Length: 65
Image 1 (cartoon, rainbow, N blue to C red):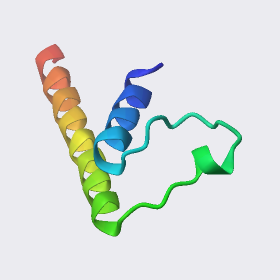
Image 2: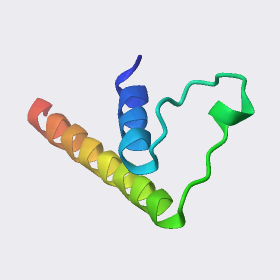
Image 3: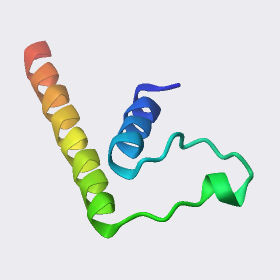
């Protein structure tokens, strides 16, 4: 599993109570009812992770030049 897949799975588990993001070909396992505030928290966590990753990449680029 890639670093991104691990991060997204972790966010889904923590904020949405979704065990896995793998398709399991079962409606009961692949579709979830999610409260809007949980979805908001998950989206915010994903956004913040992206901002952090971009910041690290920018610092790395500056260090290499």
